[in-house]
Image (tube, rainbow, N blue to C red; front, side, top):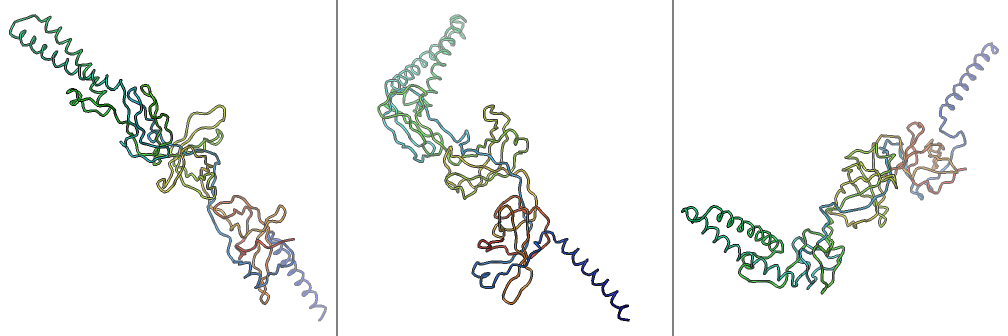
Length: 373
């Protein structure tokens, strides 16, 4: 009887051992070594916490560089509408200015001559108008010839064109044409800011004589700043308007700002093999960017959900990466398994796990003092 019972028992034990061995071989991520022990005191001292393997979004991002620049409507280069001498400068470098705020006072002989020329033209046009009306009236009464009417009208129209052109010039300088016609001349005119912004450059000095259309000052409207990005030729085909953009400045590399890609360029710089794209900066009023400031940029083309753990959960040894998974308690001690992982992208404090791992209870933080052999 004993021999009859021993054989089946041996077979059962052998099968059980085989099943156990097969089960251990399936857990190929868990190191088949003795369990690691962490005391309750060490757990609390290092502020360790338990967590789970999570699912987090990871994005495909194109890395590039760029600058903060003003939109075309956000840059004003104020020029002189007339030759003359700079009498006063009211603005200063880096000063905030409002639209129509006086920046310069300009005077000189050219201004006086323009007013005199306009006043003469106004007087002359009145005489020609009166003469034309007189000849026209006589012609309608069959006194005079049609040729005289045509000649008078031609002279009037010619003088009127000169008068109207000078009137536009006077108005462009901000002067009152009616006062000028009455010989109420001014000694100087004010040059005003065409936009809101801050002064980035002043190119003239008091007493300086400047020619017509000389650039006097540059103004940048900070509310009109945008992101200019140089994208390499090989990456441009993946970009579309509306893609999310994250960027940071050299002054604050730890802080990221949001933007939206608004245009994708179509002109290649043959020297740098880059194409300029532009983005609208979100919450621009809450920032203090500098015009032409250099930035590092990441453009997100698409996003996908992947298994991930916090960066604080990972232990690196040589070229390998590990997690510590809870196995069991032994009194006041935690017994842990060492799990080898393959890591991928890092985003928002989480690391992508590339290999398949079962849903385990892991230490999610506080492992920075751990040393694995």
